[in-house]
Image 1: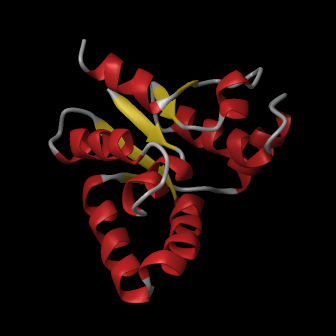
Image 2: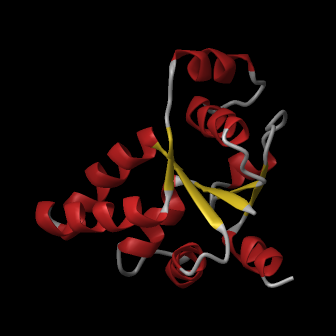
Image 3: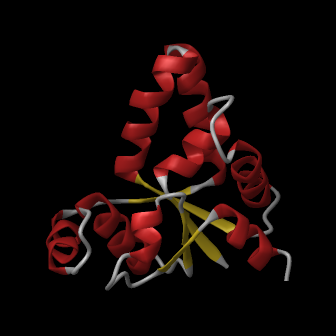
Length: 139
């Protein structure tokens, strides 16, 4: 099974004290242990760096991103993806772009804490909360 990770879930795992950190770490561990495939979009990597650097500093953030890149596949983002995302009836373009890239790269789920994403109409890949994703993985 391939799971696409929203930026917020990755940040929850790498920045101490964030809500959902324990669940996010369990999901990343599942990817690291090859119990599932993990996918992160290329534009999420830049967002992760920008936000995490404020908490972890430059050197530690680069180490974390390097580690993520060794266990996750990265979904590229191109012009067609952006155009396709604009066509989705989702209210948040960033979410729509992740959905398009996730679908293109064969993800069965998107894991996110973004309630708007989970409830968004027209999302081509099922978006679920981290707790639900952990439950699915345990089946």
